[in-house]
Length: 173
Image (cartoon, rainbow, N blue to C red; front, side):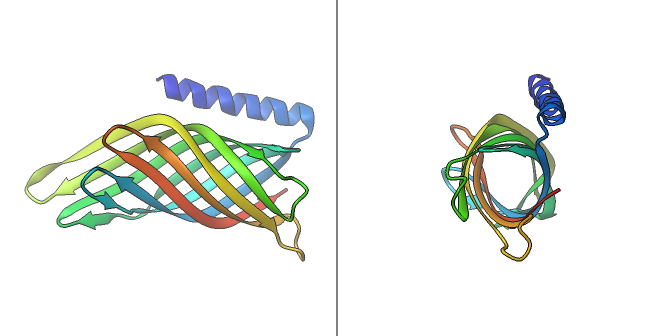
């Protein structure tokens, strides 16, 4: 409930701020390799990463929705991430450079499903603080189209960590 309220508040602020400040809007798409790590093993489900956001000089605010493309197996245990919902703030550390470096902070809600033959399927939800880094470079021939790379730790708990690496495209309107 608390995270839903945070997501709605951030989305409202983004919409309000963009309409008053004339922020640029953007959309981003990328395949994302996730890693669910535990002390004894890790799995790597594949996700589709879709983002909507607003940019003002040095700052970006984005809503990220990720969904499963392919689950992963560890022995006979099948692990999947059917959905991730996140709100990220990105600070652009070097806006004058051709390759822009981003510091990323935010909040994420991750749903993880697991199944094992002969045992009932289980589903867990992880909510928490997210952080990461990103790189981005514009195409010279199409300056509104950018190639982007992100590494984001979506959840960092005592016994489990969930992170993603993505390489994709971002387009400014």
